Amino acid sequence: MAAAKSVAFHTLGCKLNYSETSTLSRQLENEGFEKKEFEDLADVYVINTCSVTDNADKECRQLVRRIQRKSPESLVVITGCYAQLKPKEIAEIPGVDLVLGAAEKFNIASHIRELAKGDSAKISSCEIEEVSGFNASYSINDRTRTFLKVQDGCDYTCSFCTIPQARGKSRSDNVANVIANAKEIAAGGSKEIVLTGVNLGDFGKGADGNGSPSIYNREENFFDLIQQLDEVEGIERYRISSIEPNLLTNEIIEFVSRSKKFMPHFHIPLQSGSNAVLGMMRRRYKRELYAERVALIKELMPYCCIGVDVIVGFPGETDELFQETFDFLHALDISYLHVFTYSERDNTHALTLGPVVPMTVRYERNKTLRNLSYMKMQYFTQQHAGETRPVLFEGHSKNGMMEGYTDNYIKITAPEKKEWVNEIVDWKI
Image (cartoon, rainbow, N blue to C red; front, side):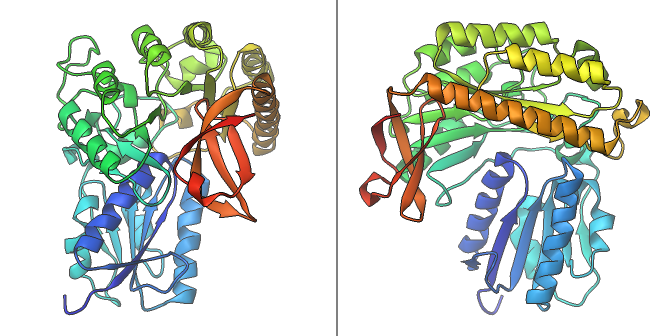
């Protein structure tokens, strides 16, 4: 390469994608590329895609059009889940030069060197069954919190989900490597690590996904990991980004309740409060188990924040079954919801189910649960009014105000003080 080129990244989707984008960015900077903001002019634009919903697909296409208008001579590289699932569809988008599937994502530097504008879009992808190995990733410099990827892929067969098709079988780092990365992150000054993965509680299957399917028979599992992370010096906070209710064991909950560093905050996907719908979704638990997990958390940590993922408008979700979900969530001692409107995805079992819920009904149900989420978070925050809790303040500010989060994930806004950035401050709510 005759001269260093500039590169700009844009990330769609989950925390896992953010950790990978940050790692790809560091790779290219080490290769001599200058990092630019996505809104700036750059020689190469990389879009790390999601494909959980139709909106993520549409947003990718809109971003490519924006780049074409702004900088038609720039190279456009698409990677991530959408790139693995539909490489030919992406290659046909005017302006796209390179599509990198799951196996080639972390070889991005060598691919860009061989790329020239004007050629037809190049696809470098393989069947997802051929994808193996684990690429550790973490985000730095972008946020006060660091997202650390410790697991990838999924062996579950939920009927609505394309993630196994996009990321392959469940595989993970080992404890020793994760500890080494955590120490590296601590040396960089980050105070908080968010552990991320596709199916985080499945940690322990190894880089090729060949570990024992039992969480009790493996040489290493998620419980081993969090116990050892708790001893790493320099990191003051850990959060578990999301963990399946059937993998959130009592021993994990009990450990977090007495941990020095793991925050009283869980995000536990539910998807539906109706056992009939959970069965159609091919989820691996019933709502009774979910309620048991929440009850134990609140018994040991009454102040704990609990977030919930839920999908509305799944095929076969009647008004009565949606009401079951609403009533279940309304009665549950949780703090907030992430509400997803069901979106048809190619090659999923859910497409064979019915009856199909009209889009207008899906949107109404989404709005209903978002209103419930708002009320839940208001109530949770009010419960802690007057308490003093530790807040980690973040670097970005707006209109002279800065933001941070308490240990139990209550968002705090305060007048900006530069000396508080990336510091933990006792704050009266």
